[in-house]
View 1 (tube, one colour):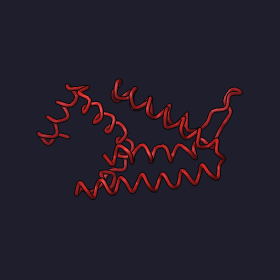
View 2: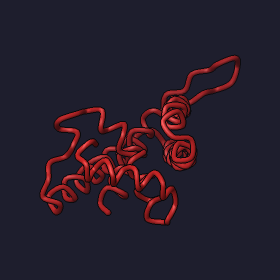
View 3: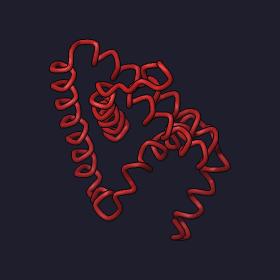
Length: 146
């Protein structure tokens, strides 16, 4: 549960400073957070279409929230980003302490990129979606292949 709040909080907090950086492409302002979300969306959709599309929606909402936060002014936005970043990581560490295991990113930093898709899959599984994928994941975990 802590991961389902901590990971989005961290993503939101990282998107805030990205939203402060705006480039103009063909006369259209393009905040960096939108570029990050678009690139992440492509990667996640390539890994799994339906989970990737679901995650893209969540990322777009987090980017919209980040851009709304930036509208408060850069000093406020950066202060909010810092506070939410610390809170998000505190939730992550609390979750791992309660689970009694080490964060996966300590052995593989790529886990930072996998975590959002993993949580999206977990949420889908809890809603009874993607039963075939859930069965495959459980089979691999039981067989030690994951």
